[in-house]
Image (cartoon, one colour):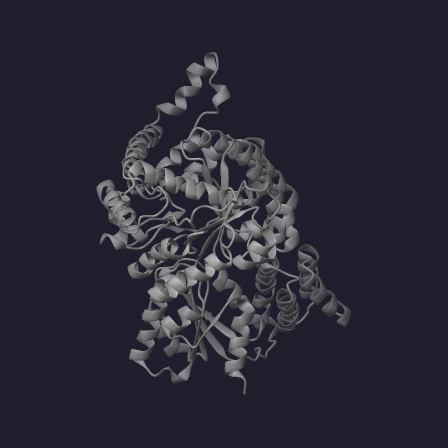
Length: 216
Length: 416
């Protein structure tokens, strides 16, 4: 397989050429291409997608389609990884635990943030929706995150965020990780109310906050 | 001398109408709009106001009498619906006291109900598709409707034979369920009418007539789900556009025909998917705005007032959505920059909103009063402004003292 194919695949993925990208990925894997390297090409393509989203060239649709293509290719590549003995897991920078807080079932915003954090290189542990304090605490114990991200769309989320952050304080010192909140009508007043460390208006804010907190 | 309730009713209604027409009323109007503030304020769980009409009415009446708004939003038809939903066992929504807790709010559940390969079937015969596919998939106790006979087959001898579908026990249970749910709905509607009459007698006008969604939101919210709908813009744009057109020409037209017969002429149009960040400007101009614009025109042509509620932030769309006939529309906003909206619209569109959920929940009465003053001096400077909470009205968690401060400040500082 030539290096041309590598670049072509990255380009097709980044340009949202779904059918052509999937066909090429399949053809490359069928010809013995290293599946780990394939996943790495996907990551490179997703970095371009993220940059275009940040530049407002891409929107929610492109992120969703990128996610779909990534899932498809991972599905093709992963079973081959053990088989071909390729090694070397990608290096993760830091871990972020994320979830939509108790009482709220909305996840579109949380999913965008998760996607953008993943392509920025973070290991993201997504706890889903309607997550109570105990589940956040268990995930903090298990994953030792650098950042905990609380998402909420409804106004009831303000109280939930406050309660969850209070529970963190009761259970342990908050020194080990930073807390960011976002979603719906969350603003600086809500940050103050919940005593989170920061709030973000969008996924780019979330990535910037994590980068500023985890920079060496 | 104190004004009579009839005089107050006329005064409040005129205040709202003047603002909605883009003119300068005697003062900034402040109606009461909320999804569920009334329940907690009156000391009830949400479930109590969703299942018990007496409690709902006591709660809404308390809010109206305590805050004396210039109009109120009818709550029966959006709250007193628990029994009906239980009876049909509706799936893509949670409501208080059913599968969720007694004080958990209504929540929409994002599901794919219609598959991507079903567009053709939907477009070819939308009513049939809704009856035999959508209803059985969304309401567990209406699953038998999947076997509903094709209506045109009920003709001549077919009328005698194809009624067989109604002979099964499953269909009987579905029909009985509909009858029971229908009785509950009739009670809800009758109670709402009586309540509106009673409040009118106390001097308080009801505000809203019908409510409708724009075609794109119907497809994404209720049929394809968020992921399916978003991906359809890229994978099958032609089918999506054809379905949007079909909905505009059928569902939307029928809704407007119905709203024409209602006593209140304001049509509420909550909007979900057209916001900044969800759609590209090109997608907004292709799949969303042109059809929403046609729908708005349909409402205007029927002699009604469209009141779209632009959820989230739509600041980047202001120049596009400014294109409506002057004095015909009220735009309700959530996070959009209202000062910029005023600059773009001039007084051609009435702007509604301004009090953020975070301020009403976590702020102080003094901060609320200051915000009202600021709004009156900027967005509301030359009329065409309605003061309201911007978290779909007043959020349940708002501090009562802040809500009171908002209404008091409208009276104290909103006089033109």
